[in-house]
Amino acid sequence: KAGVTQTPRYLIKTRGQQVTLSCSPISGHRSVSWYQQTPGQGLQFLFEYFSETQRNKGNFPGRFSGRQFSNSRSEMNVSTLELGDSALYLCASSPTGPYSYEQYFGPGTRLTVT
Amino acid sequence: QKEVEQNSGPLSVPEGAIASLNCTYSDRGSQSFFWYRQYSGKSPELIMFIYSNGDKEDGRFTAQLNKASQYVSLLIRDSQPSDSATYLCAVSADDKIIFGKGTRLHILP
Image (cartoon, rainbow over all chains, first blue to last red; front, side, top):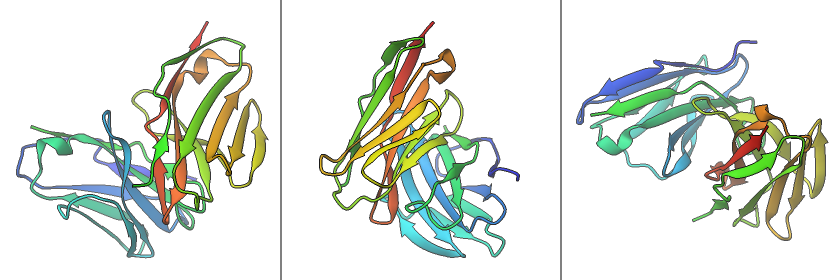
């Protein structure tokens, strides 16, 4: 089975711009979670989608949003980028959900905001 | 704010010895516990999960869970240089997964 894929792998944006990241889960997995990883804060949960519905959300501002399509692919959008949004954004998929089952991570998208 | 605490390290262990990684968590209702390994520049990889009190062994890895003490640990036997990585403890809480900031493990050849 192919693993979780994320595109693009690297991205450089300017403050104030917006960005969209994409994640394709493992075939058959219906849950997709997004995380932000920074050296200072570690891995922080953004949100989880299951069957096109947002099931859980972390403590991030409304500038961070996402969606999931009928084929389980997911996108994450960050509007009005700030310097502090520079991070590694990881997507993880699981068959039923992250809290009851193991998650498989994609390679991540490295976002740099200048 | 529910938390997962880990010593950041680095933890230096001689090759062939046992590496012991520890994690405490704040939510008594947590039911699922995971250990991920993350090599520098790579994404986390699940290596162990445990749901019940006690020990769970998988090859050179043993996860230990003590819910009364809110403590989970990972033992790595016969440590190899390839085990050098950051180990993330993750705990379920309120239908989310909360990650610790990780312990850097360095195996000395």
